[in-house]
Amino acid sequence: MVSERMKGLGTARSVIRELFEYGKVRAAQVGPENVFDFSIGNPSVPSPSAVNETAIRLLQEQPDLIHAYTSAQGAQDARERFAASLNRRFNAGCTAERLYLTVGAAASLCCVFNALACPGDEFVVFAPYFPEYKVFIEGAGAKMVLIPPEIEAFQIDFDAFEKSITQHTKGVLVNSPNNPSGVVYSRSTLERLAAILTEKSKQFGHPIYLISDEPYREIVYAGVEVPWVPHIYRDTIVCYSFSKSLSLPGERLGYVFVPQDVTDGDDVYAAVAGAGRSLGYVCAPSLFQQVTSMCCDMTADIGVYEDNRNLLVSSLREMGYHVVEPGGAFYLFPRTLEADDVAFSERAKKFDLLIVPGTGFGTPGHVRISYCVQTDTIRRSLAKFQQLADSYK
Image (tube, rainbow, N blue to C red; front, side, top):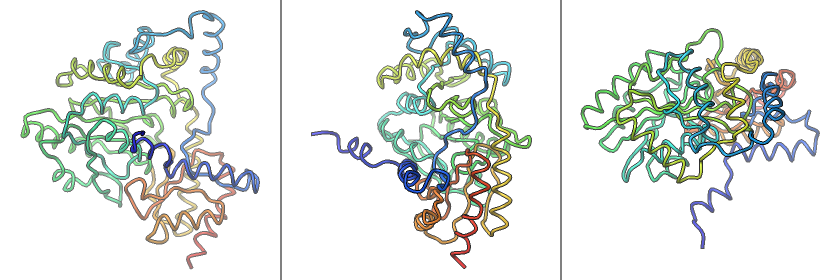
């Protein structure tokens, strides 16, 4: 006998992964240049040259040390560098003792949910949302409460949100810039959210934590502001990954930051460390603890993503697609040309366009387009998007 839940998770891939695997099979049939795969958020620009140079230097200088275990929460010197960077950039008041290094943002979120969740607890999530959130929350023994989107701008539907908060609400998860919409929550949106959480925390007599999932924090366009959330709401816990900013998704390095002002912060951090121990998320990859901490003020060339965004937004709008312009990340979330987004995605496959149905993100009637691809791929795909639109006329 095995866990039926785990068996289900292991045998049923996410729709994103299903499309990604389909794309590999289709590319072998018709040639990769003829498949326009917008399914997965795999950064298409290289890491800054300093990343590889730093890795090579460390491998040469410390061949006997660089692959060794570190402390469970991460190497002290790496955490000190990360803390110094956060303090320079955000005046974060961060110390190494409040950073827990993890195997990417997924591990960060799992550590936080498992650290906070008690029997009967609920976590509020705003659609559109990354589908794995539900897996992470339920894996911690809690319940996910989903708030429908405000689809004109993908900010927060506050009426629905306020009604969702109960005595059982332990935390609220925000992801800005957002996957899948690319929308950045405005400062006024976050301030209103913080005011509600402050009021509800007092009403129910316990803190409601705000969990800020920030893997796209540096990928923003045209001067769009990504506010530092702990400055807006005291009880914020930050989860981060270098997968996107440094184009290192395969190296799996991120962190949890528990700010000094968080209610019961020492206990929260200890519980995060305990969750990491329980889940086996200890001693994140030692080489990339050092590499990312030495390169953490850098980013890959996000200008490529901005060019891709501009080309896609303007072109799709000319074709008649309804598109909310993303302020960051590298995703577009247009409305589908029929009510059934799954059927729309299937029809797109006939034109070798691989786009992800919005139903999996809690927002039917939309599709996600990951534009972290070569700009030439987007140019060549435009005729296919036009053919798809024409097929509905």
